[in-house]
Length: 210
Image (cartoon, rainbow, N blue to C red):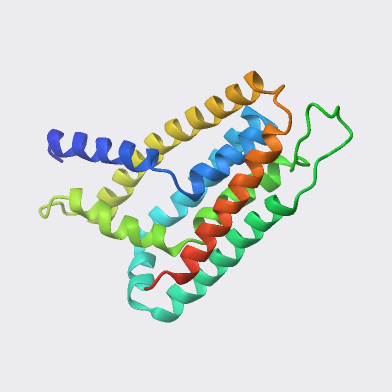
């Protein structure tokens, strides 16, 4: 691949990763409520989900979702229901009164649950598979013999840049959580806001057309 084309792809990856979406919100919500480790575990879940889509698109899953209305609808509805479940869970969560009143927080989840949630948030969104199917091939030269290998290589670059950004996002959120830890109800209301946005993304995904 031409060096200029490669750098254009890397820049595009960085810009796409910075754009806010369900993945970023999930990482922020976990890091805000449980700290940097939870945010990084959420990142690993998100990246695992992205990797599934990249491999799936490389071997034809993306093409299936693009041509089969039934497959797209099934995955879309599953993703819609999960995002709604995640958002409603955050919205109805109560403050834990075990700690002092000055530091209310949402009941923490296990790292396994956080990781699984990150995977499902991504895997159950068919738009991600269609995105990779439409975006990545634009940077693969027509004369490349093994296009599947080239697709996976570019997908790896996307995963690498995405991982760096998401870890930075988790650490920055955790830092702000520490610095603003004395603000009454901050983590609680951050989770409420994230919950509302998850519900929004769930409805938006449910209304998405093939």
